[in-house]
Image (cartoon, rainbow, N blue to C red; front, side):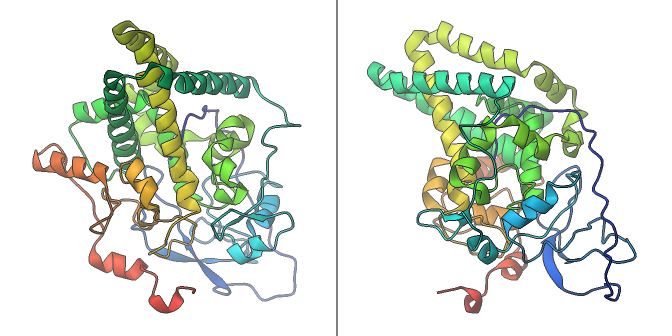
Length: 408
């Protein structure tokens, strides 16, 4: 899941790798690795079958199913990063997942506490770096909204708490997890257009970006999860995956500048309007909260609620890629994290989600609390949600990590 990232015009040329100069025989099907194939540009769908991909470039220069990679399989994230960013980028080309054991041996890589993930920052997070105008604006906004959140407890009342909880549910559950994530990013279910727009506007009020940019960025996260083109890979550190990527616009834009992977939304006048006038809707929301409830409402239903939903959302990117269990073989670091599941309305069952991106339900077992799924289920009973997608038992059995492969 993501927060606001600005859009930039597409235009970088695609990666064209030369044939290898060696005496080896042309590679046809040697040294294969399992890698998720490039998905439909209109949406991501983890139901797609695993596709064998060559780990060396064929000497005849051909690509394999539009995927052409050098010897990146078995490499550390750090080595992949150096190789990938030394060439022009193509955001549509899929690379094999890095080797966690190779990453653990990288000089300077440190283990995230209570996790088996070894990370190494690739961008200067705070000092000795250039801040763009957008970085400075975003830092100023973040400082202001966090300061407002810290002031909120000094104006405690149960009425303020009720406003906070109501807006938490409206923007966090209906807006981000149900609309932006499950409906718009993954097309897990369908609603009447008017209701889709209502839910999407709840997402606008979460102040995490307009629907089109949020969806585009999130689809890139799934397409390139845990590789150097992932906008918030945990291999670059817990802070980077949680919030640091939002504060470095230049580094992030390299990985999400092309929003053509969300053409299904770009064709819709409603989403185009929100993309063009998003800032005014955000300003209007805070102004409306102030006019309706004064400074206390602005602090509780505005600042504290916004910051709370921010960090709950960001914990899906950070904590749910570092701490928890893995039931399904996704090839990435996605984890099922119970406390993120509770706070983020079911989004913390993240290994389940990365295994079956298309699924409207993330808590696939009894006991895996998933408030967003309960809402979708009620909408389905009312006839307001159709085409609700769920994984089959056969799909789950195929993806499940076999007991013999689970390390002690």
